[in-house]
Length: 194
Image (cartoon, rainbow, N blue to C red; front, side, top):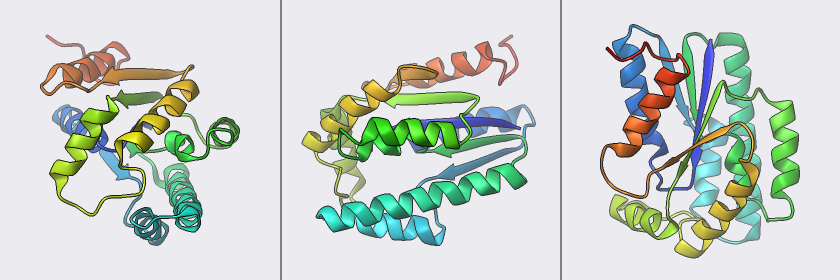
């Protein structure tokens, strides 16, 4: 089994990149599972519900249920994971915590949970992310303002100093995905291009 994490700000294109990766893997006959957090599990649904609310209590509950959702997925990964498993949102959920707690939580969870064979940070300018989020037309979540996205991005960039590959997705177009594909081939997740 190979384990990939695709992480980054809201609106950065994590799910899009994960689905495009799935297409590449499946074209080579690989078995692929993509789990996006918050997932459709009960903790994931509760996390999503509290993310659509506001205030410190909702933030605390969203964090609690997000953590439970990821832990549920990790338990599944350890017992059922086959082929290539892609988690959308994983360790960098820690970046959404208050700045003083984020590094502590990140160190704790990165030691407790399996570190991915490939950890991708899809980076994006917070203003671009906010515009893309607005185009979705869904109920906004508590972290989906330019100000909060900028704060989360700053924390996330401090956390990913080791073991992460950063892909800049601030520009529209195919270049970011071509870079992801290059990394996948370079690291032998995909066959070399002919």
